[in-house]
Image (cartoon, rainbow, N blue to C red; front, side, top):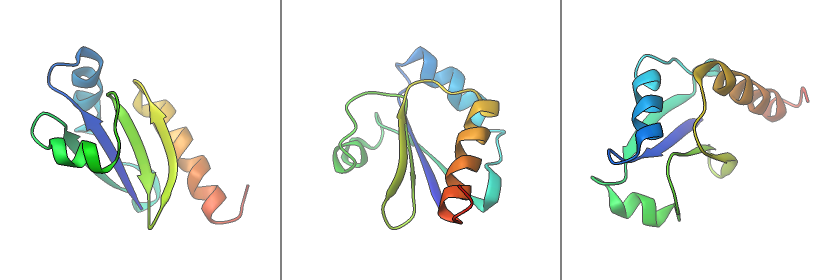
Length: 90
């Protein structure tokens, strides 16, 4: 699974969140990808991102999405819940 985090250098909450996430290890072997929409506007268009920060957890399809700032502790809880759903534990 992959966690895509869309952000912009012009977004204050994005900058705070990206600083946290640079040292963050997602649970369950999830790969973290930080995508700067200023540098990669085509990716934002492909994923139909309308605002940042925007997070998408995906494998072959979108499993979970959230718009807005998330602290690492809360993100770990949200991702763990999604992993459990995928494993049929929830």
